[in-house]
Image (cartoon, rainbow, N blue to C red):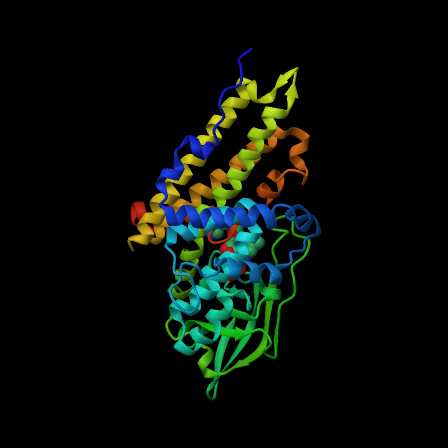
Length: 393
Ligand code: FAD
């Protein structure tokens, strides 16, 4: 029988730390400590109960400086995009629901206001959103229009100087706990975005229940029943579908890193488990089939990390294109879910419980595979970039 030798974690084997600078390592370590001490001891119960203390967590995450952290000004930290990605990775090592809370807040709701909003909108909302005192949501998807948001039925019509919004949005993260909703609607001028305080008459956001995935995340319907807003509520800088798509590209970038956090947590857990678990009188980790699985998963995790870091450097130099974000989202989420499922096999029956994080991550990654552009949509984006032919319809 072979003897156990020095053990390295999968990403240490890749020397992944050498890709980061001191500031990035410090941010990563701070977020990791927060997740280890505050999230990991509680997350299984939150997931089991389908409840998360989101408002309290938002304030903690605001103090940690991760809400809108890659944005400049208005109380935001102004870090590099790569540092933001690394924070997403640590948050998602805790739970994809936690990362979703932060992604929707920073990359969708805050980014929409930061990039496309008026100075008044920015000054009013961004500092309290960065502090986690106001939670935001982003309403694009509708019951009948997910992958094809251009078909949306929500309409905003002019009434004097006001706007009046009517329609229904579906699958909206943070919807029921949000103080502000960025809502996209058809107008006579094409698709426009609106900043909707959620206490406006006619706005409601019922929670979507009975989810088997992202149970530690609030998912809601948004109902807009003749919601009357002042003329100043429109986002002046966004016209057409490019407005919401620019925000989605931001959030997808975070997922490129985030999904790897879930995969890393699965793989680290599995390696520890396999070293402890005795099968046929010796550690499961010492069997060749187990090691083949662990080696292959490590390769995919490490390759995903190299891709994420490359895309991060491109984003920080201002050169990242949306179809490159699609490469990262498609690969890293697809490989993360494969890793989670393979890890589950190594844990056997124990793998199906909440005692270990693996089934929880695997179930969460089903949502991550679907939101922010499904895998099929990203294949079509890449296909179009390669061939020049759009095959969406
Ligand atoms: P559909 O668009 O109906 O797609 C069904 C299937 O058809 C998929 O496999 C898809 O890939 C495939 N398909 C679509 N088009 C093509 C094509 N041209 N060729 C081949 N196959 C195709 N949305 C928001 O606006 N804000 C949020 O905060 C938000 N949070 C979410 C949170 C969760 C937990 C989930 C699950 C979803 C969330 N979404 C949110 C919605 C998400 O973005 C949509 O679910 C996603 O865009 C897919 O839309 P759909 O579910 O309607 O699927």
